[in-house]
Length: 119
Image 1: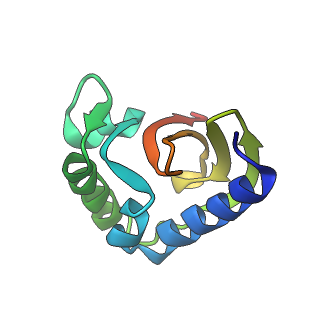
Image 2 (image 1 turned 90 degrees about the vertical axis):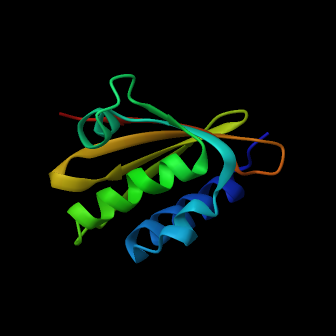
């Protein structure tokens, strides 16, 4: 079970790592076989499923995103807690809100992420 303390600490570190633009730091939160689902995958990677699997595929996607948005800055709004997941609600890019549901493995690494944006 995810605790409030873990969720809040993880969310703060997650936002901080994205705002640092340090790709290795960002990826340190994820398993090697992670799966990421996002509408931006369709746009940036031309992957019609909106999904990428494996850390190296995700690395290429996020590297491209960080290059295209050099002033990327997330602002944490709220963290919601599930049994084996958290939802991070934040101000994302282009003035849009986002909610990212992160599912954790037994080692508290993210093995699946599903991102939703307010359009």
